[in-house]
Image 1 (cartoon, rainbow, N blue to C red):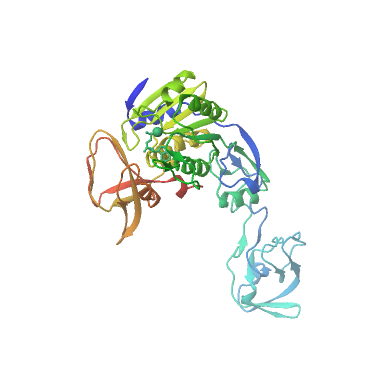
Image 2: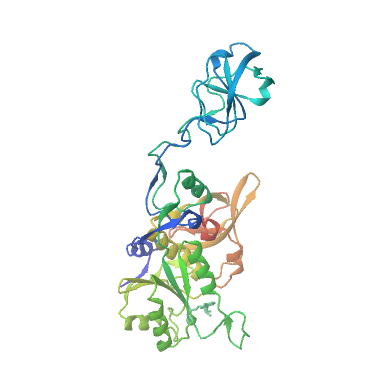
Length: 405
Ligand code: AMP
Ligand code: MG
């Protein structure tokens, strides 16, 4: 069993246990935020045929060499109609936005640049060839890739899929993640707080993180620091695709989780990571079920989720490395850390003069939740660094809830 390993190694071990989720057909109405399980290619061009971008008159450019030019109105064509018969020399056709372009028309004159006189129309401005005509396939051609496997669908993707005539998409099934809190001191919010107790917050935040990361959270009842209770709770959690536990893995005398897991045949792939906060972070499997053991501190737990569990979920959902996208900004203040560990600092990104700058959100203790709620993301300070000076360029990893699709 590995112990006290670097962050990158821990993540690599976790990702080696991520298997792609099964796929399912999802109606377009339900597809927001879902991850595509297959590439989606266009089955036809868009637009499907040339059509007018304006309300006006379709003309032959060669009939309007000089203005004003008078043309005979041969009829009209509306959006949704077939293009009708071709126009002949000296003719124009009244045409509406979105209507198909009849044969012979090679420009559309906006109605504002014409004057109608009975069955004739006077064109007041010389057209450019092809003006105000939306070309067949100008958006995409048949066979073009519209979105690739692993794409998380945004409202714009949903509209794109609809334009391509898709009523549904093949998406990865959302993984169900059991979320378990442990500790004798924990009280469910809404209940009176007894002496020595604190409100249970980790599972609420973690369930929300699971949701914004594309999974389905399954919240378990918080378990007491009691081997029998913990065993039952872990077995309950193993019914889901993965289990995320917080607390109970440090060196305290009530930290029974490790021995309970061992009793259930767990394989520990690593215990402890060279990081701050969250150095007790542990990863195990029971059978093939991944179990993430996050430290209990209310900031360590969500930060470890962002780095490890979110990375795992993205791999399961076909988009490994999705959360590696960073915002580039300058450091708004000089910060110092101790060498030999990766630091995860909570930062807020603000405009500062002409630049976008990152500032610490206040005290970085692993119990300070307010500095988490004020933060936009995580500034990762690598193991070798001791100082980041004001003005240097840094990369901030936005939190999952800031980039949820
Ligand atoms: P542990 O990792 O169990 O030693 O917990 C570390 C610290 O985090 C302790 O101060 C706990 O009271 C606190 N803690 C653990 N679990 C939770 C939770 N679910 N909600 C809020 N605080 C917690
Ligand atoms: Mg505890």
